[in-house]
Image (tube, rainbow, N blue to C red):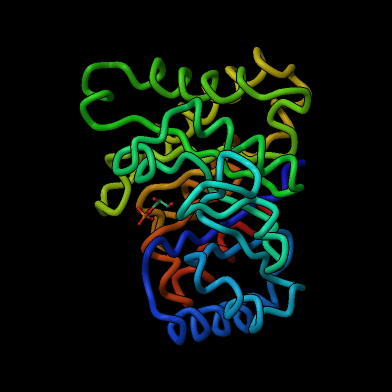
Length: 253
Ligand SMILES: O=C[C@H](O)COP(=O)(O)O
């Protein structure tokens, strides 16, 4: 039984006051929900402000990245263990925006994943193909390569307690979501790949989230798919009502 996880990726949005207000609204509105884990991932500089308005009972706190090495000479980076001081439990890694704008490779993403695991954080590893790759019939090759490219570099614990997020790049922030069939096909494919890498028991226990223009209007159908175990939500996570409606759709899903 996989408990669904809905994670809000606030990306690089909002000033401190906006972050506090959004977190406060989410905290109040999700209190009545059950059977779903909920996490919000504000920008680093707002982690403390958001932590201060969350009770810790209903909404977990996530970061949007962590460093590929321990504390030391890494200007501009945040070490995984530093996040622990702010009550952070989850960390998004390998988001397509990080891959595209900052050149993050599977190698560096694996190093970040290892650091996150060593600090006791729950990594949310993002994978997904671009539109050109999909149109060239390369979707499975790309996504399978991303999964292997990180998993095969991890020591000892493998993926551990991590979560996978399938995010087709062409669906991110575009309003064009994958159909429920497209999402389920790729989630089942990812689970097959995981089974080969870490065995059936681990693969069937691992949560695989969908991300890419998930909204209240399409969340129910996507989350009803057997291999879709939650969502990584961008735009809709900036509106408390929309985000909570998606969380409600995931209850018991
Ligand atoms: O991390 C979240 C994804 O990039 C999805 O963003 P979106 O919901 O705005 O399409």
